Amino acid sequence: MKIGPKFKIARRLQAPIFEKTQTAKFKANSEKKGKLGGRRPRPKSDYGNQLMEKQKARFTYGISERQFSNYVNKVITRKSTITPQEKLFEELERRLDNVVYRLGLAKTRQAARQMVSHGHIMVNGRRVDIPSIQVSKGDKISVREASLAKLLFANLEINENSPLSPTWLKFDFTKKAGTVEAMPTIGGQSLLFDLSAVLEFYKR
Image 1 (cartoon, one colour):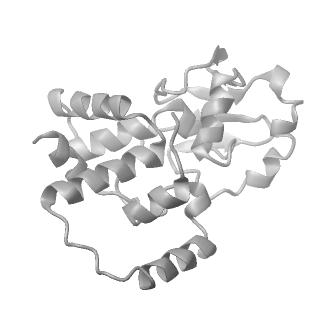
Image 2 (cartoon, helix red, strand yellow):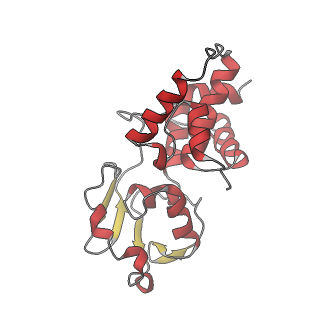
């Protein structure tokens, strides 16, 4: 998915939703531009706030409007034992490209998406090239043996203590293989977007 100027989008949405905007330099630059902006921003309507939250979530995971709306509609129409917000979070987090990113195999979700698309990743011993495929509890995610010698994975150990890796994933950097030990949960997560507002946007 072609995203566009990331710094401009992040400033418009007032959130560091891209990895390259999660820096002190970007924060300082945004604050400076805000002070020089002149007029105060107009207060947003409920629709405007919901739209902004939706865009934050969509750009965070780097997926198209059609893909994102499919996830939301699936959550809204199907019965579940957990809340719609928790289910939507689970659906987004279980994407293979997101899991590869969370495991520390790639520095960005975009890089993780390319990694999967180019066939470097295996799930349960089978080569997978579909970034949107969803993992399940017990799945094994590994780097294809033929890809291990590539420069792409040369310094993989650097990411061993990555804070991105959540408790529901476990990765063995010696074997270059990870395991989905549980389903992702929204509890205790510090999100840049409000999933309740996202769901309200699609229920209009």
